[in-house]
Every structure is written in structure tokens, then in C-alpha cells.
Amino acid sequence: MTASTGQTAGTPTRPLVRYEVGEAVATITLDRPEAMNALTDRLRGELHAALRQAAEDRSVRAVVLTGTGRAFCAGQDLRELSGAVEQGQGIGDLVREHYNPLVLTITGMPKPVVAAVNGVAAGAGAALAFACDFRVAADTARFVMAFTGIGLAPDSGASWTLQRLVGPARAREMLLLGDPVDAARALEIGLVTRVVPADELPAAARELALRLAQGPTLAYAATKRLLDHAAASTLEAALDREAELQEGLVRTADHAAARKAFLNKERPRFEGR
Image (cartoon, rainbow, N blue to C red; front, side, top):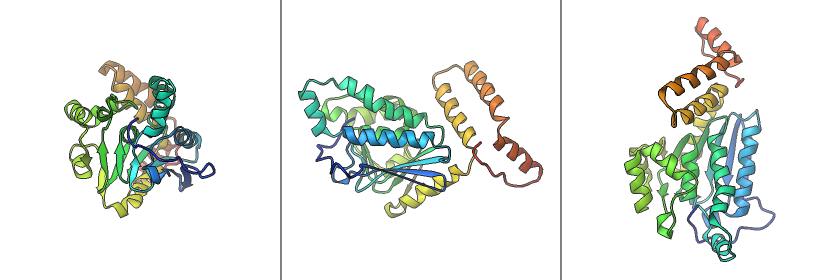
């Protein structure tokens, strides 16, 4: 969770999440810039619905997640959280029922997900970016693990994803101290894939997403599953799982197209099936 002190959630009729599809890429945009895209109950619901839509739409073969304004996402709206806590609502249930499903939907997405980090990513907002397969950051982006700054511990998978991205020592430093990590440092420690000038971010993220959307979607999905499995398995179990998934992939249309292209000395054209 964590972050912004929050403002009003916007008008009831204006969506807080924009969903657009073009050239097999779904772009999901958090659109609450007046509060740095801080997460309210309504925004979380709209975001989860958009993520599920992208996951289920077979015409979508890659996803971009980004924000509007000066922030990617400032994490949980603290004004809304304060009201919930004062009413006696448990924070554990909030995390389990609203944040964990978001993270699991991103990590379980059967197609690649690119986070286009346009500005500040704090607390759960940063964790959402960590859950994505790629992070392309604007040179103005900053990552802030703000949990301990408000007397809380990490949630939204940050304790799992962050140390796998930057190693346990740097993850411990970021999570305990909560110091901002700018885009240049994020690239240096492997937290992001690429850093570009802020005005080039949308094009750079889309370029990567388009490349992925033209790739072997089923093979990408299997690779994601293998990486998650291997992170908590023995070598023997990983080898067995690899053989199991390869058995299915060798029968796909994309693999058949790749074999034919190889024999004809051509570039394969994948259709995601």
C-alpha cells in the first residue's frame, strides 16, 4: 500500500483507469493525477477489471501499465485508509482482498506486461511496477519504498519481487531506509530495464510492447510460469517442469511456423497460438 495523503477520488462519472487496445497491445492508464494516482477502493476495482480484461482478451498479446501526471502511482490513498482504520476495518483484509489479487493478476498475466514508469512510484505503486515483466522508466521517475515511513511493513509482494530484482542486500536497504531511488540509480542496480527522456517514455514503452506483441505469446506465458516455479523449486523440479511445458509448446502453431521459417531461412511470423 502506502503513500499519498490523498484528495477526492474524482467525479463519479469519470473513469479512474483508461483502457485502450491497438495493434494487440492493451494500454492501462491510472488516471487520477490530482492525487498522484493514489489507490482508492474505486481505482483498485477499475484497475483489477482492466487487468482481467487484458488477460482474458485473446487479441491482446502485450500490456502496458502507466499513469498520468507526475506520478506512476503513489500507493494507497492514506486519507481513505485512515477512515477505514478509524471505523475498525482490518488492514490485513484490505491487503488480502484488494492488493494481493492485483499483484497476482499482473504476475499471472499470460502475456508480457511493461510498466511505463512516468514519475513517482511509491509503496504499493512501486510494487505494481515490480510485478511487471519489464520496467521502462522516464528520467524523472523515482521509486520510494515508503512503508516504514508510516510505520508499516511491505505488502503487495514487494518483499518477494524487490529482492529478486536487485538482490537481498539492496532490497533490505530500500525497504528499511525508504530513501528515494532515482531513475539513473534504478538502472544501475537492475531495477528497471531502460531509462529514457520523459517525453519519449510512451513511445519507448509502446515500442517494446509492440515487439512483444509480435512474439510467441504462448512461449512467453510458459517462460513466465517456469521462472515463477523455478524461484521456489529444486533444479530437479525445474527440469521436470521445463520438459512438461515444452511438450505442449512443440505442438503450437507458433513453433511450427518457426521450424518452417528456419528451414526456409526466413524470419518467423508468430500469431500467438
